[in-house]
Amino acid sequence: MTAASSQETARLVALLARLIVGCVLALAVSGKLISIEPLTVIIAGVLALPAPTDAMPHAIALVALEAAMAVWLLSGRASRWSLASAAILLLAMTGVILAGRSELLDLGCGCGLGRVFPGLTHRMDAVIRNSGLVLIALVGAVASRSRTLGAVPAPANDSAARTSPEPGDS
Image (cartoon, rainbow, N blue to C red; front, side, top):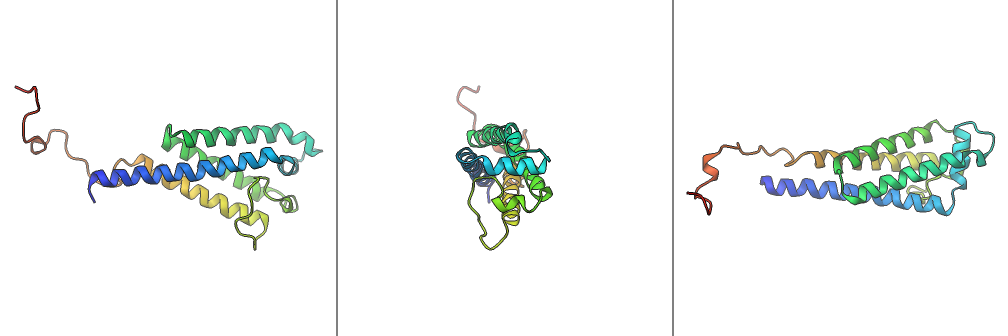
């Protein structure tokens, strides 16, 4: 595998990771905007708030954060940092799901997405889905960071690389 094809593979891996994670986050945002009540119930339970309506500012902030993350991922700007940030956000959300009371997750995880594994509980479904997305984001971040996925770059002063003079050289 040449350095150029390795670099193209790394770019493709990073692009696919950004598209997958960005689209899933965008779908989750749209689902939450359609019905934000399950999310407010879960947040109220996790934060021990007296009523789900008290969790609305937190829910709106989370939806805005997810929307911003989806836009950043899909924009293609700072690919490595957007993927690493998405992995951190997804890990934090997974931690909240694991820390939350299981009876709250009977409503679903509040993400607005359907279940991926219908035979599992809502909690385990969300944990497995988020873990997969974290893995995709991390692989994409590593691929985005690596210019050639292990190829050794040629030395800068390699005389063999220049066999004929460039136009305009004297």
